[in-house]
Image (tube, rainbow, N blue to C red; front, side, top):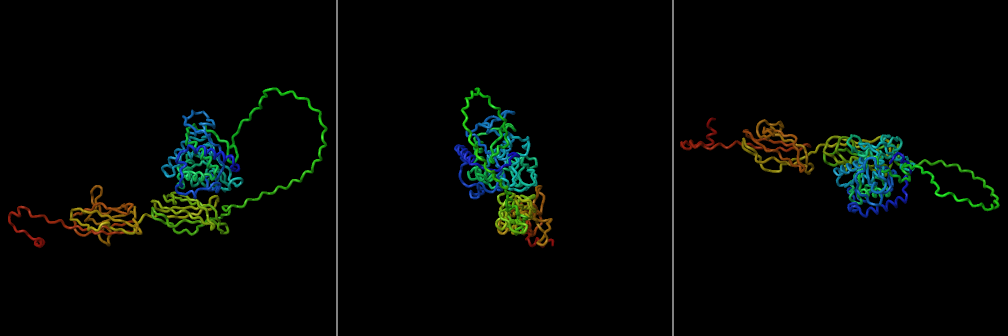
Length: 591
């Protein structure tokens, strides 16, 4: 919506009825998967947004939107119109979408198909929301990289006929340092864009006024709870989460079904501009004044006036009443958010988890007044900051939680990724510029606390030979398989000396050279680790193979190398009749 979106959001009964009729007419031929029943993925119908509640539960702050409805006749795809032609806002031409805008929607939907395939986000839904929010970026008035030629701003959300959302971005996105405004072709409020913003065109920036960035952000926003758009419940939940209004849902749904039946590309800047808005504003459209009509026939000759009647005596005017003194408007009572002075920790324990595991501790924050009194019904946003692949449950890096009666908001459980090290979880109060509260969380390397061989066979071979069985061990941690744990294997000098031997059994490297210490080993997902084959040189005796893992688990395996058996007498010796010598005698001779 454009910069003149500044009036009260009033949802009239007429718009409701018309939108509902349009949806009913279009739904008769819609795809079966759209009307399929069932629950939305991730959340149930009971968790879905309820219409007409919670402005901060929406991407737009429930700002006004265009209520123009598509024609009831189904569009048919047509070739792209030549440059310089402006489609009329009726018939099949209304199905035309500006080229860059259409490309942004399709690229965003393709990205979501890879990132969140279970969401089943159709690009036509992004097009429907873009139509209702900004008239497809004001008819495609965008540059080649998708940036609108001028900012698209919603009304000032100052509580005067709209939601009261104090400035959260210091005017960075909407130019207003006092209150927030919805921004861009998909109309995100700054506090939502702060965590939902995406870089859709790869320029290294997240710009809400860029249709590629905004469309990708809208897709991730709609799919953030893994709602399945191929089900009726999932589709309804997602649309209502964007702007929490039944009328809005009906209007978006009507355009969704219209675009499903056929659409085509038109040149940028040639799209039709909508005119009707949910706050009864015409969207700033102007019309040229018409000239006075020329009379088709001369005026008729006036008839003679009748004889005037005697005028009546005028009545005595009544004494004017004294105007009442206008009352001073009352100052609205502060919202709970307005009373928050600071945010503090609510007893969060040490945040440490092994790579791939869930953190056992959950982050809790408490909002308080200046006097230290708890403030309930305030939205606290938790955001994961830093170079980490850790997420909250559900795979997101953010979560917004409403404080309870004790002023406490508890974030979802943290899930560690594979990247080790520390990162920050930042807690902020939505709609309030106060100092954030940072928590430090640490991900440690995967570890094992026990190692055991998977076989009990003794490991032995003769000098110059090779061991018949490869050494295999299983790593566990607290009794469970310890997968992807780093390990080493070293042929050590003794139980007390971990130095690698220089004679005795050995592994081979890629070139076939002897190696007696292996590093960069890792257990499989099942905790198993199978070492390469072992060989023996001509040194006999008992040797020790020590295997260690991250976490301190150690296993020492005994290896035995025996002398090769003596060779048989030669045929000439047997023929000469010389007496054979016993082994004991051989051992004595030459002593």
